[in-house]
Every structure is written in structure tokens, then in C-alpha cells.
Image (tube, rainbow, N blue to C red; front, top):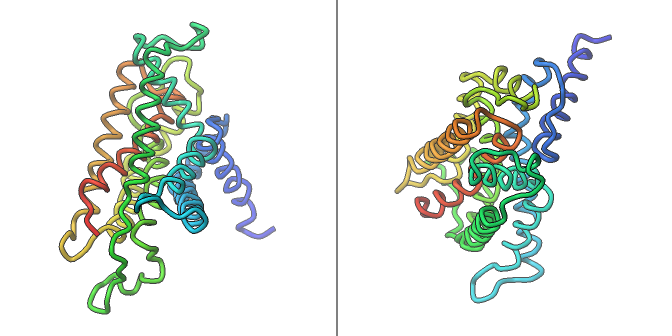
Length: 281
């Protein structure tokens, strides 16, 4: 057996653990070693989701076109993909978290029903806001760095301007889930893996992944006129996700499966808002 063979099982188990949580909302009862390895998959799963966003947006745009310069159906296709498949677990967790926050922290499963007076407007606001953000993404002026720009050597990985936030938003959303697991303690009754994930992540690993995500954001968003805009957007996403995670943990007595996953929706929506507000391409 080769020296690398024993690592294959943990690597695959780590991918299953990360994918199970992000796609299905399932916290596997895996070992700390598996969850430690799984932390590296979170932003990578996000990038894969971003490529899916870009792919379905591009295909729908080519087939259906746009109406008055507004890409209604491509934005709808991305929204359905995220809310119905890739981010369904995060959306469901966000709904349940909002329900608990609006009813004093009581578990909706214990009550047997949700407070629709709280959740229905909140869900409608989130979904409509995300749709508006998606169709508002600017086409931008297509440009690629010249030889005098350090990003010239990365030109082969530059998609069109409109596709760049589509790639970045899911990455930030999945990283935000990892951030939330590291904020505060695990709530009573939460899956044991919630506490395990928070312990094995650690500030160095978390900030290292933040630096990598911020670097990619800077590469895609910065221009001669806005060299630091990618860093500013990244710090703002960090701030709003941390605030949400800390507030929910304090309100609900610690982090649980839903509060951790709900932060992913905050990361995605927050990034799109900050991108549209600050980035000029």
C-alpha cells in the first residue's frame, strides 16, 4: 500500500461530510479528523456551485435572451437552482432560524408549526431581494488585464464581468457557514458535529480561507480606479456574517444546525448587495 493510500478514505469522507452539510443540511457524526479535512472543501464546494450558477445563467441567457436589457429568465433560473437544489438546505435553515428568532427562540418542531406571520414576509423578502439582485447584475465593459497589470498572467481564468459575482457569491455563502460554526458555542440539543466543526476550524484556518476568498474577489473586482474594492467587499461580508452568527447564537443559546446554515444565505445576499453597491466595472 502506498503512503498516500490511507489518506484517501478521510479525503472522500471529508467531501461527503462537507457536501452532506451544504447540500442536504446533514451533520454527519464523523471524527474530528474528518471534519478538519472537510473545512477545506467548503469554499471549493462554493466555487463549484458558482460555476453552476454561471453555467445556467449563461445557457438561459443565450436561449431566452433578455427583456429591455434585463435578464429576467436567467436570474430566475439561478434563483431556482439555488433555492431548489444547491442552497435548499441553507434556505430551509434560514426560514427556521427566522421563525425561532421571531418567536422567542422556541423550536418550531416542538410547536408543530411555524409562525407564518413572521416567516412568510421574511422568506418573500429574501427571495425577491435575491432575484432583484441577480437581474440587476451589470453586464459591464468586458476587459482583460494588459501586460502592465499583474493580473495579466491570470487572464485565462477571467470570465465576462457579469459572470464574476455569480461565481463569487456561492463561495462566500459556503465560507460563511464555516464562520458561523466557529462563532460561540454549540447549543444544547444541537448535533455533536456542530461543536466538532467549530473546534477543528480554528481562527488560523478560518482566516486563511478568508484571505484566499478575498484574494479571488480582489482579482475579479479590482480595477485601476478601485484597487481595494475587493478587499472592502470581503471585509463587509465578513462583518455582516459574523454579526448574524453572533446574534443568532446569543438569541438561541448557541449555534445549531439551522443557525450555522442560515449564515450561508446572509453571505450570498450580503455579497451581492455589496458588489452592486461598490464595484464599478
